[in-house]
Image (tube, rainbow, N blue to C red; front, side, top):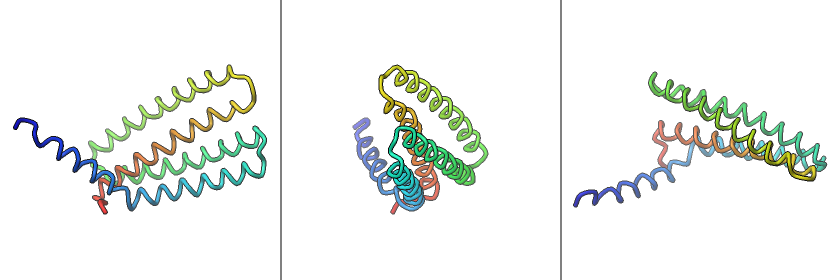
Length: 147
């Protein structure tokens, strides 16, 4: 029966991960939604490409503030080893983010039409939203927010 109970443990892990999406994760999800709505409102007032790019850049800047907040909140829950690991992980994530954005900017700069200017800011905000969610879920896990 070697390895026979690995699948139930995996299923339990997935179930606990899904159910832990309450509390702090919900709070950050609401914050992302609020900021996204503000961005959409700005775009609806100025739906030119420039207006949309500016609104998306402002959204990114606000997400950066939220990311800093969730990062600090997670740091406060960790022991010294965890803090070092998170710091290293975040530095590597920033390198990844910057390389991903540079790749996208290069790729889309070769496309015709001004609407492609929105692609890079959109990728930036998606990366930021996902990182906020990741860090918030770690906080929830640290607090054992299962239900």
